Image (cartoon, rainbow, N blue to C red):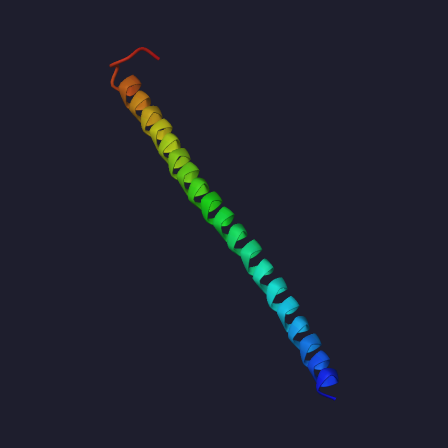
Length: 76
């Protein structure tokens, strides 16, 4: 009788262990995805700031050129 009860307990423990392994695997995958997402967001943020700086620089240069032409400082 003890051996039969042990087999049932063993199967329940094995099922629980398999579930925990699957959960751990999913968490590890999610962790890596989050790390990738963090890296991508960081890089994307840098690209957005750089692009904003370039656009601002272009606007300032255009305004500078317009004012210089308006005041006759450079030929049009």
